[in-house]
Image 1 (cartoon, rainbow, N blue to C red):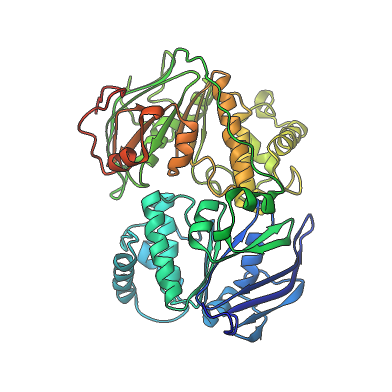
Image 2: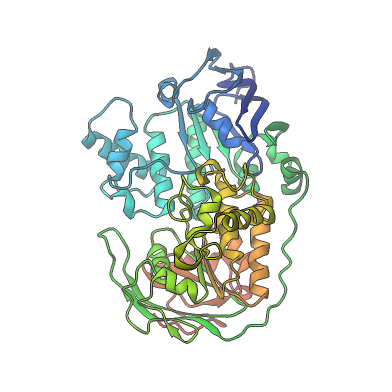
Length: 512
């Protein structure tokens, strides 16, 4: 990095006011050519708004922006792309009914025909180790696979500045390492990278400088390689996140039993479930690791009731056979579910937070289906207060929240229901370190209160913190469950390839 070179990007006094919050307040930011620059801040600190301003999706109320030494006032993302600025959003912007290649092609303002784009995607995916199949419809992809599509689409434009908003939130450790190789190679070629993440270890390993935001203002510009996680946390949230202190919970009776669950895929690009067997007791957390696209979505659909095709007797909740029961029947029996996809499945984007409580909670539903709006409002307000959700209030639309704040609300909505069984997919996706610690603490408190928890996550560190036992999903099969105290990251990494022929000491006997 040449410190005397003209900055690739320079922001001066950028401010943006929304009706309920001042998202950016006099922000200054400088990024050099070939620099990997982190932007760090808690949920609602103004990071995403600032990135949208740089990308032309939002116009600032005040301040100036210079790109390669020239003052610019971007009115649209198309203008930004024409300058050489690309962005990968935290919430994906893909058309579900189109293929990967068609989505990438539509994202290019002008240029090659679809067959050429398809060939280029294949070449880029191979070059950068991003497993992407151009002909697959997007609706068949997991969240992690969609993220790779977004990254490939951004790389297709050969950007001078690449903005990545939480790019590793649903990637496995191996995929993160491969992504870092890609980003370092891009930086060596002169591409500047703005990297937004809540994962402090990643920022310290990858980035050369870090601008920290709190409440829309810059609180510091540091070299993260010379900082500790604790010092970065203090800059970001004013304190270190509380350490998790799990207490031994008394395990009770079996709450969930899955016996030889076999389900054929519902679409040609899905994964067949093959003899999945597991047992989960009250007061216990069972963690499921694995690379996205190996059957986790299909298993979650079968357990939540979205896919009611399971053979009778293959899924039991307590003493009740729920294999053919729908989601509402399962919730009535105490099973609550947090999907990995926040907008569209966990919450309806255009509905208010109060209205979104009605998706899974019945307190505000009266006889005959009449809605008690005041009660829904009070429930939403209590969730906002309990889980520290930053929003304009219970009347705010779900889509107006930052990703991390919406995640806190959705997870909080299900935790607050006091379930007998809580199934959570990617519980802290896109959530800052303070909020992640809070969510994990609430999950452990639920466990200590006697709830059974099934947690699916691609963050191994998270699973090792939360789970009592761990297993791995690979190619539609589920590994034996091993106590966390007897597991290792290396062992789990091997199991992700489907290699668990021998049952290790302390593990359950494999039934699949």
